[in-house]
Image 1 (spheres, rainbow, N blue to C red):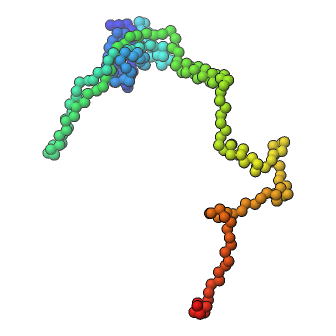
Image 2 (cartoon, one colour):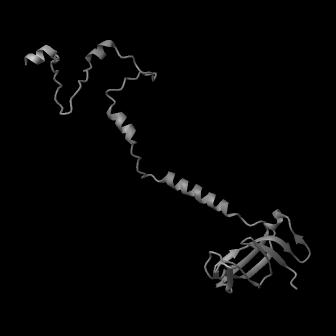
Image 3 (cartoon, helix red, strand yellow):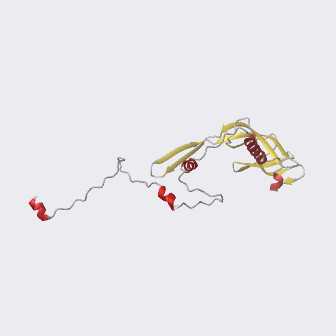
Length: 203
């Protein structure tokens, strides 16, 4: 019996593994020949047992995907008495065979991948800021429309407040005239008087 072994968890199940063992788990997404690391829930060393979560982070369990397999066929027959109901179904589980390559307790925790991703993000930000030939951003359509209509906007003073418009300036502004559908000026039609009953008889 080996002196060092670990209990690992994958697919909601726990397995006892030693270095050099091969075992079958539920199908994994990795390709054949890929190396994966398994999460340890217990480690038994030569002289001590590790159970604390903070210490289990130092346990390193590595495995290699040996092959993808299918389990034996399971036949399921269902029926209902006196009804003539019969259903015959077969099932084969999708499995992956793993080969354990390393089971050991490290002296310190391995570096997390999150720190590496943070460094890459900061490096990408500095590279984007250091590029001298960066293209200026186009103004927003709303801002462009406001700039085009700047002549109608009220002037601002040096303090930033809007200056009051004088009544002379208001009178100088042309008033908008209502336009018809065809674009021509609307002509006022004379009001038509209703005929009385006597006039209708005469006509």
